[in-house]
Length: 613
Image (cartoon, rainbow, N blue to C red; front, side, top):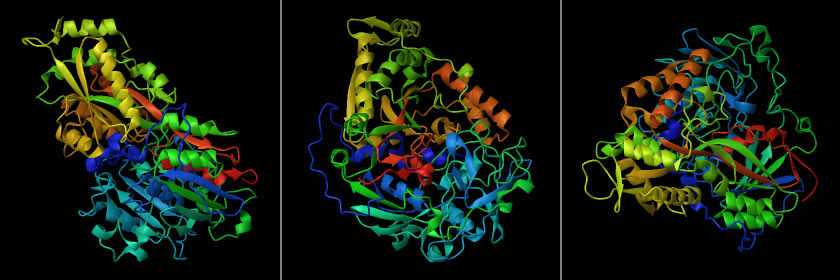
């Protein structure tokens, strides 16, 4: 399943963006009081970025924190990598082919790839990494999407995957960063997360860690890596979806998502003639001379770790940082108020939504008119404007309108309309009296308890929850807000012990949302939090997941969009952009679709520094 890992309840925290647990909201009009952290001087052309949080396990399979995922993105490589606007580009693999039945993917590895210790990166490393993800003892977020896939090492530079059923987004799984077999073969899977390697990894990516502690990570660039956005070795994509020789996959033809890393949207390969393969025009070797890097490149990166947002913002405003990300909107405004600073907004599949408990214990939510009334009662454009400052988009389905897979003609929008909401409740047999709304055959007023993460866990979700409560109360509904800490919140979602809940889904960019709504994925064993069970919906979800032909898959996505929006199976509110605040000294970061904040490094090789701090 293409994006099951993005939703796996292996961490119900994924849905509530518990990465925000270390963050604290303040009013945008206030200046942060904490004293800036004193940062040890480094060379003038060292780029310093503030990261809220600390590394814990710098390993693509066991990363726990955003700091871990950021370092993984800089230090490791996958067979493929994310390109501009959802394109998929070659990385460790310089070419690949896909069988006509969509079941066999063969990747040809570049011959010049080396681990930090000089050992070659081989097909055996790829098979070893996938084997770890498939290990029964592995409990991390990557495992589910790799189950049932056979990996064959053809030779040192060729690896083949055989799928049991077609997967529309399999190519994005190939973004999974690869681990070195020769350094980890003797490490038990249970020990991997806390191994010496995961504390100080040795990768094959464009940067190497030279210093690492709880305060910062200093990295140096490895010479010879090509531009992130337009590798010269790539040949233009052709029309056949069955064979690829390393061509970029445009967003309109193929995108998807892997685990917590960068993602995009529809998936199958595009083609290029074998004669045009990058294998015939190899990219520069990572072992090339450092002089290959143009002046001004980020030769040295210093990621500085902070306990909280306020301290990070204070250091940024004091001129000690070149950039800062992962901030709540109010904090981003404070940071961006610094002279010559700007905000780069990355479209992100972080969807805030109200989930209605549709299990048998809540028959009231089984009525379409009731679900539609509750959505009609939420002023989503106003929430986007006030809570997010327009940094995002209104959501009608669990697929952002900026995605190439989004079909506006297939979506049945439900606009904010309080009068229509009351009419729908009446049509559902509800009556409004002195005690509020009364359900059919009931005598007392009906009340909804809205579950939310508390402000310390997720300040944005908490604020939206408060707004939803007020708007539903304005309809005459009895509504109470219950804000709890991260642990209690995750447990309540898993157990289904809630009426309605505000959830922050980290969806990935592939339109396969089967983990979100598939009947078999009902919590606590899966991430279908609402408990909805619908055979027609299951068929539509499976169609999106297993269709690899681009045209047929788009038709499947459109059919799913129509069904989900018509039946109001969830109450989507908005997608929140990722905000990256950069100083005037930084040149080059370009906004792009990202499935995880670490995706902001998609073009890091093109960034420049303009002068001293």
